[in-house]
Length: 286
Ligand code: GUN
Image 1 (tube, rainbow, N blue to C red):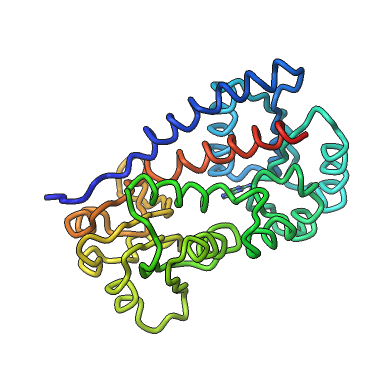
Image 2 (cartoon, rainbow, N blue to C red):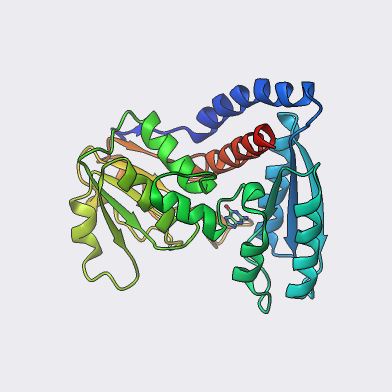
């Protein structure tokens, strides 16, 4: 039996997208249709799915997208040239370079080349630096989505113990900063953490973003904790389609948590809604 409130990211993202529609109309009325350029290099199947769902959602709220598909053989210089064109194009308000990039492409150089005012993913060092200083411009979409879900759960992080599991540049590190700015006492656990169970057991808020299926056991969850599961692990379950599992053992965690995000339908839809919110902000400021 689940005692937890299920944090429905699909419903919450819909609310957010509905709120965006009016702002999109206002941009259009002054002749600036918000436009997101989506750059996808190579043919990573998961990336193709993500990109398609970002573009579909954008169309639903009236945001234009410009698709830039490049072959897996694209060099760093070729990609930089394409980004330079997009940086100069006044009709483009946001630029998203889907990660991961093929091996051999210099990801850091690429992310640094995006105009920080069009960096709706919030991955440019300027934007990560502004976040660190507590004066953010664009906040990375998944971390922003996590914070909106925590707020929606009615949980104020102030004074609480927050545990972030995972230290990636795109989720773990920025979400830890956001929790810190919300006055949580923040711990970041990672692959070298000695006793993950002990860390989980004392956490009031857990953000799991490691990409390891069900690494976090349900029985470790503190009673009443808020659990945000960023994991999207495709696991072969012997059936025709792989099963999508989070980083948290869902059923057992839901029996103990105060609130928990499902996988899928939790963080995923929020990430897309936050991306599109960033695109609209970029268009408003252009
Ligand atoms: N790959 C996995 N997550 C993301 C994301 O949020 N943005 C981009 N650009 N690539 C990703």
